[in-house]
Structure formats: C-alpha cells, structure tokens
Image 1 (cartoon, rainbow, N blue to C red):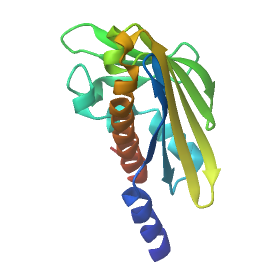
Image 2 (cartoon, helix red, strand yellow):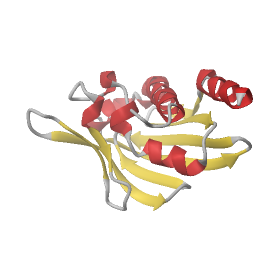
Image 3 (cartoon, rainbow, N blue to C red):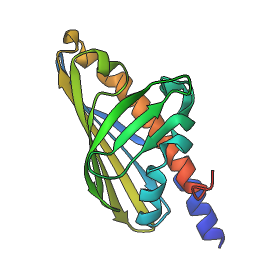
Length: 174
C-alpha cells in the first residue's frame, strides 16, 4: 500500500515533459506528456472532463467549469459563456476510446490569426499506469509570428496537462 501511495505522489510531482518540436514564422509543433499511475480507461475518462482541470486563466469566460469536450466525431471542445455565446476551441475529428483523440482548430489567440491546428492526444499503456502525449501542430498566416507563439502555447498546454494529471491522480472525483 505504501508503494502505491509513493508512486501516486511521484506521478503527481513529476513535471510534465514539454517541448517545442519545431517552429517557423508560419507554424509550429509542440509536444507535452505526462505519466499517470492509473489504468488507461481512467486516464481517458478524466481527460474528457476539461471543466474540472483546465485553468480558469486560459478561458474566455474566466471559468474552466464552462469547458466541455464531447468525445464523438464532430464533437466540440467548447466553452459556454453564461452571459451568452461561447467559443469553439477545437472540433473532434477522431475518437478511438482509451487510445486517441484528434481535434482540429485554433487555440487561444490563434483563433484570430488565420491559423489552425491539429491536437493529437494519445493514451499509452506503460508499466504501472498510462502516459498521455499531447501534440499540437498549428500553421497559417499568424502575421508571421508563429515562431514567437510556439513557446507560449507550449507553456500553456504543459500547464493544462499538469492540471489534468493532478485531477486524474485525485481519482477524477472533483
């Protein structure tokens, strides 16, 4: 039992792996990953609840609780605004339960930059649990500043994945 508690603590304290894979004036690729001491089905189920783990600071409404993810082709990773309206952050293109989610669209300020992206989230079985790898590739006009946006997007997505890992490690009870 002590071993399981220690493993869970280590999994939560281990920083998310984050990397700007490539970047130029009109596009970039960032990759982030976390390891969890959880079965893959629990890791997948927790990911589907962004309203419980996304940061309030990286929403349009100011409340992550307004975020939702519909895991079906054509589903929406969307945010509602209680005062009316909302934002479609990404559109679900591929769903392979407990294996992969692929979404397309523009995150954050990329929405206004004539840039679009593909977020590919893979769930992998590893010894003692699972690993989640989130890869986001974006390209387009971006006023020629995509290379400058890459590190910021990478940092924001790494933060979200750390928050996701903490939520999942708590048993997704929140």
